[in-house]
Image 1: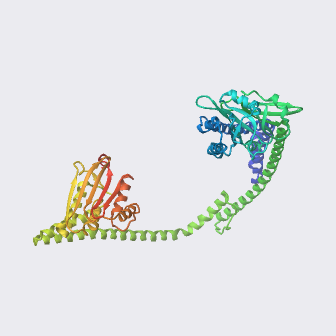
Image 2: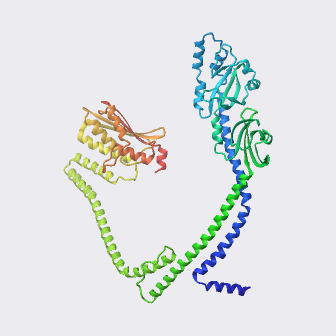
Image 3: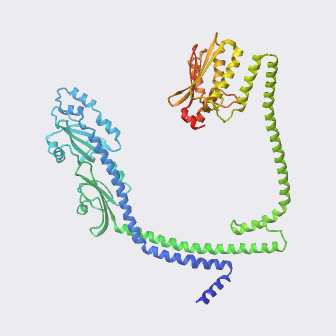
Length: 601
């Protein structure tokens, strides 16, 4: 046995590439596929029959679900008319004036309102009343002896407010002699007296839409007797009554014989809300139709499989020949390259692994020729990067020299002023240097409340030298807040705006109050001045600009502060502005509470 297997392997390994691929495909692919296909086709009949029956159940379940929604909606509509005082008054009032009765009819709009709201389901709504003084119409129907003797009316009266489903003719002119599934129920007053029998008619076309795409005879039947709607004409409605299940059977599917023909009957029973009545959706599909479809699918499957086998054998033959031819060409080119000839054909054809290998061979030869050029380009690139790096370092050094030069110049001025005993100038220069150092060093690093207030005080003292006694200020920080860290440069821009826009234009002495205090869940920094203020229009424009900030160089304004605070601390923080013309302006900077700020330190 082992020798036979070894001989077979030697035979296969000795075959040419094309024959070996065809042999492997037939043994490893075609034969197992044929066996599996025969097995599947053998069992396909039962599978397809089962699928057809389950599909029928699924379709009827969908019809049942839509019918339950529709009847449930109609039941809900009838409940809206319970204890309706206006309807009770019409039912009990003895009319002597015809115009007065017509006016009451017109003022009762519930029929029209609910009819419009549920127009896709409800075809008509009316009520039957025992009131001899009424002149009936299609909405308010006067009960006559003939109506009172009808079975549906007597049944509705006996149920004493319970729901009753029946088949009734729609009294609307839009539905001439159309019968529709109708829900009737006796309406009662709060004291239990009869008001009248309300009737709500379901649109007949709703059931026609549910059944329009059915491929077999399908019936909608009320209480196992009355056909509400149907589709198909092969099955006689009079023959199906004995096969319908009882009303307590939810779902039934079985084979039956109508005459000599076998059918698969599928029935879904739908209990109707608040009623003993029920609907049944029953379909009757001829067994021959199911088998015809099964046989058709089986024949198509066999033809498709046979075509697939023939096509696959043809494709594998063509592919084997192409593959073998390309392998042979690749072998010849490899022999030429091994012999030292690098003049290869431009393309081998195809986009598979063989063409990739051939392309790699050509790429390797080209890479050897390009290697020196690439090394030279890399050296040039490296030297260019070195020059750029040194240039960047030089610019960074120059940017560091400018601030230091400025600080040294200010320090020289301060010393000269001190030697000349110009102490005011010395103080101004000293404070200016501190302000510029804080401004130039400001970045993402936060500062303490105390340091920020000191910066503001330096700025205000410089302004006092400028305006002398015209500007006064007060700074107060609540105990425990000085050590809190906050964003830098959020107070000084507000103070600067207060002086430029509020106090410079004021006649006489102006005052700026700066306070930091706790308020509910926030730490609030308030900058308040008694300057010229602003009009309501200008205040509204400024408040709108708070949320339309655009960066403009290094200028820091109120919008900048507002955006920085919101981005850092959240949407509930930011800047609030209030101003009254000729009275002053108050700006509040809302920060998180002290505990949250400490947690961020």
